Length: 367
Image (cartoon, rainbow, N blue to C red; front, side, top):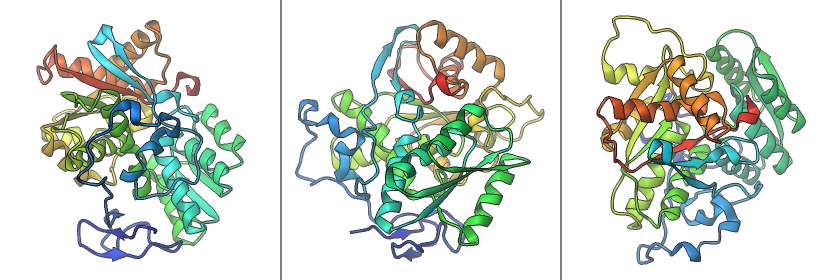
């Protein structure tokens, strides 16, 4: 049975269907009205009892979506990163080369369940490529609104999947505005990685996999890139679901890292800035001026004793170069979280011996 949608801000509920709204009448994002959890009497399974061949869909009892469009995604490697005294989860090895496949498989699966014929998405690159690829898998047409200067490698990925890239001149917000105008005109169903609740149902599997790979031992902290909060919020929701199911007994601190010059969450936590930092264009994938789920991100930070900081291009590039030299071939935006791990330790927010996991979110082959 398809899950209805509801608004946590005003309480309105909407019936599931191909004509369901992409946001609430009050302007806030929607989420699923019901949050599935395993049987409360069932303990967390041994790792050997999880069929990892099902990928992230091995956790279907946590998911409000039925598997339809899948490429075997999930259960990405968790490896020791001795040079950083941390663990890295390699979400850069997904079929489309980024963690956005987590949300694309659930979003396009829901679109297929609803009988959607065309999906529309706006993206600077990774989300668009993932949505295009999974739309192809589902047999659904896709139009991806992208900045006019989007990287050629990401445009090629969109086009090769049979989707139509729509180039928009101007800012990243101009791209979103043009996309929403098309959605409002009835040109397609909004498969947004920022607005669509099905996307977050997918990204929460990051936490489910991570906990299972660690035999249900929760790390002290998880450090992630933070733009729209797609992975940051997904991680929060996944660990919250595990805690509520009784499979884990704690929540990790959630620590976000933003690009200097485009860091609304970090700026709000730090207070009013006296200077305008130089824009971090190395981490171009998280340059989001107005995160759609800002309030939810801040709530997740407060509830986990978390934080958000911003870092400049130099720190991000240094981390990227070091990652490449140690065998982790990732795209530039991915390096901001590793740079953030170092910064959090230098600032005394994280102890040197804290048990920390960092996702590597995108492949260097997409650079």
